[in-house]
Structures are given as structure tokens and as C-alpha cells.
Image (tube, rainbow over all chains, first blue to last red; front, side, top):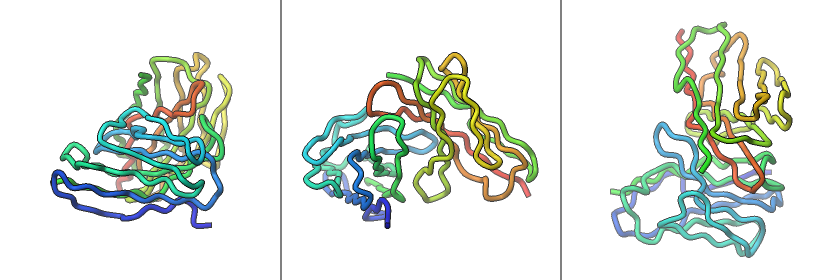
Length: 113
Length: 110
């Protein structure tokens, strides 16, 4: 099992550009999550999904969109990149929600200039 | 929303020393989790706590679920170089979303 994989590892965007952060898990988990981690801060939940076709907003959803067409994939879309979106983005998955173990990907470091 | 305050923010210790850190919440949780993040990696779960007063160990790590359900503690005994990293607490109450603390950065001085 590869676990949770994320691509790309690093990316630099110009203000106003768009991009999609990819996330795939091979553990057949129902739940998937996107977090952002700003320097010196904890993880903030952007969006999550409880299963294919179902997504919901987390704590900081503005400026992002997600889709969940399959169990395995949960891409995160940035439509108009802004400097405030400079962060490290982590995707995670779990079998059930709440306190179940979340398995994290290695992260994508995004810089918006 | 719920807030988790983690302390200390950073620790500088010598190899072999014991480490203590804690996490306090403005509201109660049903589950406390402790994660560790190595540089350049995603967090990895260390210990999960599901009951007030629970004390759970994982090797040299011991964590406790506070009686008030508003706090949790993590201790590391006899620290070694691979303990370096950022330790996060996280809490859960009644929904699918975890709330994460701001982290404690552990550095071991040679």
C-alpha cells in the first residue's frame, strides 16, 4: 500500500493563476480531508468528504473547491491564487470520521507570488 | 470554534531528558489524539485516548485524557534524537472534524 499520495510536492504560482492539488489513497477509506498548515500553526481543515459524491466545508474553505468522484481521489482546486494561500497543504484519509486515525500524505508546499 | 492551546510552543532539551507537554481546550472533547510531524512529512498518529482519565502508553510515550475532558498530556521518557519534530494534539467532539493544536516543537541539543 502506498497510503496517501499527493502531487506535486512543491509549486510556485503567480497571483491569479489556478491549479489542482492531487490526492489519492489506496486504503479504501471513506473519509478524506484537506488541511493547510501555516508556519508555526496547527492544521486548519479546508474541506472534507465522507464518501464519493459528498463533500463539505471545513474551517477555511474560501478560495478552494473540491470534488470526490471516486473513493480514491480527492483533488483540491485553487481558482485564483492569492498570497494568503501560501502554505503547506496536507491530504488525509480515514476509515470513519471523528476520532478515527487519519493517515496523512507528505504534503504540497505552495508559494503564491 | 473550538480552540486548542498547546504548551510549550517549543522545547530545547538534552538527549536522555524526559519531556512533558500539554494541551487545553475551551470546551470538552470525546477523543484526544497525539500526532508527531517529522520535517517535510505529514503528521503520524502516536496515541489515541477515548475516555476521561485514560492513561495510555506507546513505548516511551505516555498520554493522559484529563478528567475534565478539556485537557490532555503527553510525556516522553529518556528522549532520543529521533524524537525531534513537532507534536500536535487534536480533539474530537461529536462530528467528523478534528481540531488541531498549534504544536510543540521539540529540539534535542547535542
